[in-house]
Length: 193
Image (cartoon, rainbow, N blue to C red):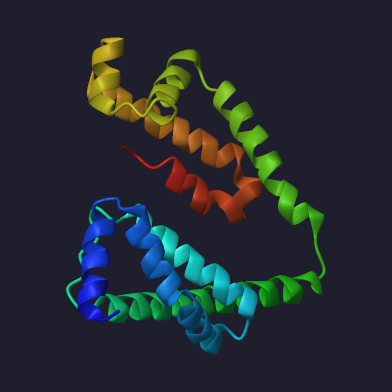
């Protein structure tokens, strides 16, 4: 078969002709596996990569637009898939190395549970607010309402909402002072709307 025949097969499989697709697959599969093996150094992975590429081509056949020769397109596609596979493997190895490295470090369980204590203290501090202030704070921070929406909902002025929010945040700062290392995060979470 020459390139003209490949182009005819491509046009047929683009319209859903399975026989044309299988013909291209049979014609190039072995050569593409050999080509992929040169990149991946793994026969099984090379075959999986080629098969996956053909599956993807079949799935996107209706939108596929091959302007060069079909052979060139197939080999360029498999080269790109192999390079992506190599990059993926490299990232996996780097991550495995980081995990292995961190496994040798001492673990301080308190570091991982401090957040639980902080969340409980935040809830207790919010619950300790006067009822109206607590309602304004929760409408702002838990329901995401803007100060104007809170003022309209509660039939109060925006200045009152601002003042009550300022007092609520001041109270939280005072109540959570022993979590000072985390207050930067806390203030980001509880930033003014």
